[in-house]
Length: 238
View (spheres, rainbow, N blue to C red):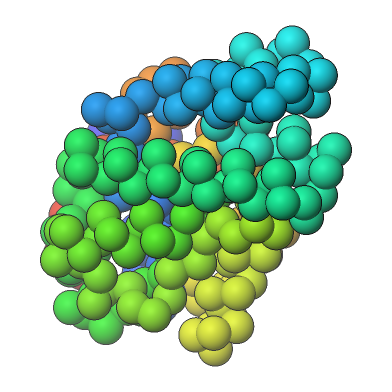
C-alpha cells in the first residue's frame, strides 16, 4: 500500500466515522435512474414538446442539443421564472422520471450501505435535483423508504433551489437539527460538491468510472470512490 493510498483510506475512514447524518444525492449514488429509460430521449421529448407549441426560440442551439432534461428545464425557467409553462414542463419531467423508476439500476452496495448506516444509528436524508415523488417511489420499491422518511428533499417548481444551490442540504440539516460538520454528503457531480461546500458539509464523491472520478477531482473533490464497497466494508469494520 502506498503512502498516498494509506492517506486516502484514512481520509475516507475519518469522513465515514465522523458522519452522524448522511445526505445522499439520488441519481448516481443510489441508482442509475435512466439506466433503461434514456435521459437523452427525455430531453429530446421536452424540446419537441416546446417546439410543438411554437416555442423553438426559447432555447439556444446548445441548450437544444444538450441531451440533459435539467438543462432544458432550467433554460425555460431563466426566461419565464415561476410561469405555468415551467410548471407544466417540470411535471412532464417528473412523469418521465416516474416511468424510469421501473427500469432504474441500483448502484452496487448502495442498499446494504443504507441499511447498515441506519442500523448503527446514523440518520439519512436525500438531497436531489430529481422529484421527491420519484425518489419515494424508487425507495419504496426497494424497501428503503423507512431509512429516509421523512427526509426526502428535491425538485419543486422553484428551480432556483436546485443544486449547486445548497437549499436542499440546508433544508435537510435544519429539519434534522444537525450541524454541517457532523454530516456527510455523497454525490456524483461537481454541482453536488459545490452545494456541499456552500453548506459547509464534508463531501464524498461517488464515480462509477474513471472519467467521472476525474471530473470530480478536477472540480476539487478530495475524497472520491469508484465503488461503495469499501465504504460499506469500513463501516462494518468500525
